[in-house]
Structure formats: structure tokens, C-alpha cells
Length: 330
Ligand SMILES: Cc1cc2nc3c(=O)[nH]c(=O)nc-3n(C[C@H](O)[C@H](O)[C@H](O)COP(=O)(O)OP(=O)(O)OC[C@H]3O[C@@H](n4cnc5c(N)ncnc54)[C@H](O)[C@@H]3O)c2cc1C
Image 1 (cartoon, rainbow, N blue to C red):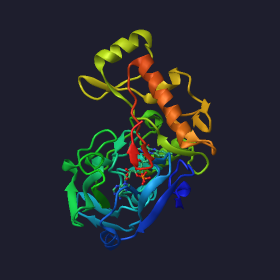
Image 2 (image 1 turned 30 degrees about the horizontal axis):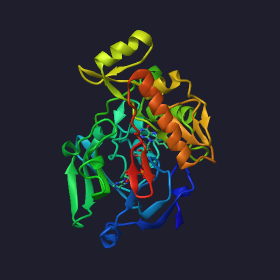
Image 3 (image 1 turned 120 degrees about the vertical axis):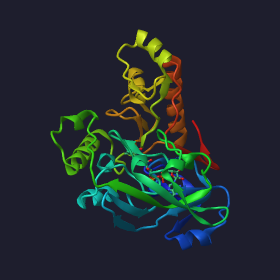
Image 4 (image 1 turned 180 degrees about the horizontal axis):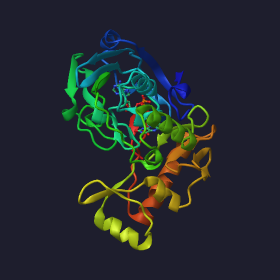
């Protein structure tokens, strides 16, 4: 058994039967067929091993960045194992703008399309042209266009039809040369005529101040997704909780910050065993160092159930939870 402690940012002392490192497309092809249970792993910042894993972990390490330019755009092919934040920094330093709001999100480029990473008013899907992958059943190299990726809020085809069926080998980005600033989010709005570098620096600063660094305190970012609810439900919650924040997503629906719901129930700073609901950001559950998978599930289920009873809203986990034989939902 191999320890998974350093392979996921939550830092539980789980083990896997085997870890295979894949450094090239040739490595991927020669590793096929994969036998179940297996789990494809990037940086492990959205994956929590709540128990020992009975199968093989396939760790994706492909590296390399290629840039092309037209009069209007920069086209960039980035291999799946590149570090996301380093890639964003690489772009900003070379005058290729658009991704700066997504600075300091941990993990790999290959995982970015899986949950359509987003922050500070931007989602990665807005800059993806296509995604290259190897189909596990056939070993064939394929590419899927952005429009066919089914991107939504923390969602894509890779969590549904293509889940466990492909290994992403590269993501093809297109960054328009005509840069449009996105500064509608909170503290970014205070910047006057910011450059892309200013946005990058500010995002890094805000994130460092607000979010726990996984190397200091094990965590996987937001544990729950922000729920999308119907407007009639919002109206009825407002009668008792007039301060509930909401952001429209369509004529019928709006998004509510899960952190606000959890905060109203007094969980901020509370612990269950070795699991902490973070003081600055109650959406983040953290491992104080002695936490166990069982405690995490118990705490997360308690929060989910309390939110359901109080607000009639069912929280869903944003993180991927792995037990002995694979993914589970809360
Ligand atoms: C402190 C912190 C802050 C965070 N902030 C944000 C944020 O602001 N916004 C946001 O969206 N997310 C955020 N996250 C979550 C996380 O960083 C992202 O989901 C990231 O994209 C995960 O990358 P990873 O390589 O670590 O993925 P992993 O956890 O390794 O894998 C995630 C999923 O992708 C699959 N996968 C990974 N690589 C491949 C591949 N090459 N081919 C096929 N499948 C693959 C895995 O099987 C798994 O299902 C945060 C996490 C932390 C710890």
C-alpha cells in the first residue's frame, strides 16, 4: 500500500494499493486497460481520500506549453500536468490576459475543465477552445470542442458522460488580444483602471488573506457548492432571514452563498474531532492534522442536514469524496 497523504491537499493518512505516474501520452496508452477501481489524479486539491483506496491511482504528470498567435488571439496548448497557478502567471507575464482572476487556484491544468473552475467573476470555460483526451476504452486520442463540453457552474461533461472514461492530456486555450477587465467582484471593484497584473496581484493578496494555505492547514477549498434555488423559495426564506444574499442566474433561479447559510447556523470556527469549519471562510472544512475521514463525513453531513432543516436547501459537495471503491456523494 502507498500513502496518499502527500497526494491530496486535505492530507488524510489514507493509502492506495498502487500509484502509477503517467508522464506522456505513450505512458497513458501503455497503462491501458485500467482495472477498476482506479482514480485519475491531478494535484489532489479537489479530491479527499476519506478511506484507504482499494485500487490504482493514476497520477497525471504530462508537462509542456505551446503558444501560437493570430492577429486577434493567443492560442495556447497546455499539457494536463502543468500547475494551474504557474500557467496563469506565465500568461500574465507574457501579456496574454484573461485568466488573471483565476490566480492561486491550486491543482493542475488538466483538472480545470472538470469542474469548470471559477473565481472572482470568471470561469475557465470562457477561455477554453477544446480539450484533448485519451479515450480509455480504445486508447484513441480525441478532442472535444468547448461548445460540446457541457460547461456549467462547477460542472462539465467530464463529471457525467465522460466521467472515468477519459484522461485529459491537454487543454487548448484561446485568449483574445483585446483584453476585457472583470472587476465586478468585491474588493476588485475598488481598483482604479487596473492592469491584468494588478488584478492578478490583488486576487493573490485576497486569497492569501482569506483562504487557508493547504500546506499549513489541510483543506480542499470550498467543501460545498453554492446552491441554486427557485425565487419562490428565496422569497419565503427572506421573510425570516431578510439579509440572505442572492445572485440571479436566470429569470426563475438565483444562487445563494453556502458560506452565509452555514455561518447563520454558528458553525464558523467550530470543530468536530480533528475537522474545523474555517474561521474566515465557513465553506472550507479543514483537517487540523488529526482529523479522520469518518469525522469529516459526520461533520459535513451534520452541516448539510442543519441547512436543510433550517432553510429547506440541500447542499451538495463540491469536493470529490473517495472511499475504498471510488467516489461517493455525501
Ligand atoms: C485552497 C483551495 C482553494 C480553491 N479555490 C478554488 C476556486 O476558487 N475555484 C474553484 O473552482 N476551485 C477551487 N479549488 C478546488 C481545486 O483547486 C480545483 O477543483 C482544481 O481544478 C483541482 O485540480 P487538481 O489537479 O488538484 O484536481 P484533482 O483533485 O486531482 O482531481 C479533480 C477531479 O479531476 C479529475 N482529473 C484530474 N486530472 C484529470 C485528467 N488529466 N484527466 C481526467 N480527469 C482528471 C479527477 O479524477 C477528479 O475527479 C480550491 C482548492 C483549494 C485547496
